[in-house]
Image (tube, rainbow, N blue to C red; front, side):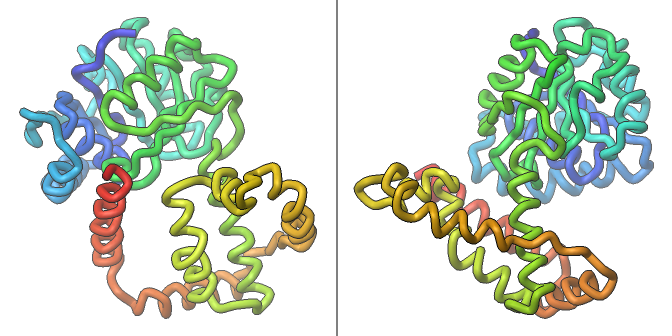
Length: 307
């Protein structure tokens, strides 16, 4: 795969604009494309708003927030680029023809990276020129702050392309992980969905309020999960005997709880209860204010982890 110095961001909504800001902070040249007439302004606002944070997070010397251009035609946008980060709407009928057009317009050694949050790369790359260089590169929102990127090659991408994607993301300061096989929702979203399902079930069964369900995570295991994952966390829970001791002495209790985990139906009434509960939890504060508060805390947390 070729060195990546100029990258196209195809699909410049919230995810694409966030990607553009991060790429710029790592010294890359960005060409953005989106059918929306408001896309250039969204990118400008995102880059300007995120730049002070990106500098705190270690923007490379000489990084230029103005080193981006906009081209509405995605095929023209990818011309002359070394790679693509595609972030179009999460539907096969949108992504497949777009990826075919992009693939046909790019050289064989250019990576095509898809931000898809749960679609299968083997289906996304159907009909593409050189499907072996189409790889899932799924970020966690917002991409300019969260380090995780899930890399999935499935049965169609080459090992070389997967490795090149890993090296690219690692080289620009991300934390890529590789999925050995493709599954709907990839890995992190499936873990997130499993927890949310039980969180909804606890509200539906009247076990706790929305606020207390959220507090049970944010003031409890969520703090540990910011430092290490569930396996390593339970390794520590086993004391000096580690995970082996946990398996022998604590696992029966935990697996006993699995049998009572719920599979709630999101009826209109339950949806309304959840929405109202979140409104009470957040005090009705505007989304932008909540996001700014979250992002500031994320920057402090990332700094603490790096230290």
